[in-house]
Length: 195
Image: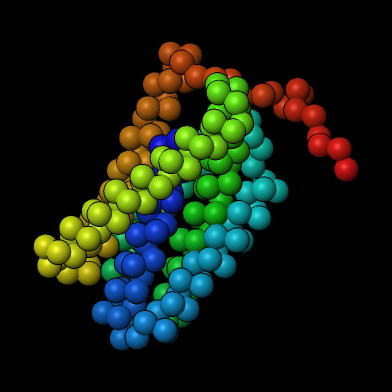
């Protein structure tokens, strides 16, 4: 739950950060900066497609380190001053995000179904993700209100994403060690869906 909540909150906030970053680093106006948001969306689609093909539900938690890489990728925005570098970086961040969120959503749906049923789990997921968006946007608004530079905002935002993901990984290891987890289905029990 924490991973998808962080993902949606970070994704909503990143849209505003990209616009500000494009204005200060690339001298883009709003309409040109929105193209970079489209580049991120293309990256997300590519990453999601790859995750759907390459990551099984059983091995979904192996993508957790990508959350830290997303945070570091955001921090790398500080050093980009040209369009070609921006396109490559934005596509990469989007691909990491897409590859990350598909397996995490699959795990969340499976565990939610086991614990409380599909309908309730989706309601809880949507509630938490929307709260995550509000909290992250409030954090961003506070940083802007305090008059921090774009680079400082990017740095703090990237560190927040990477730090929270590191905490999630740490907590996952504790849960795996103590056996305090709902098991994922083994490969032999997963039946392919009918055509």
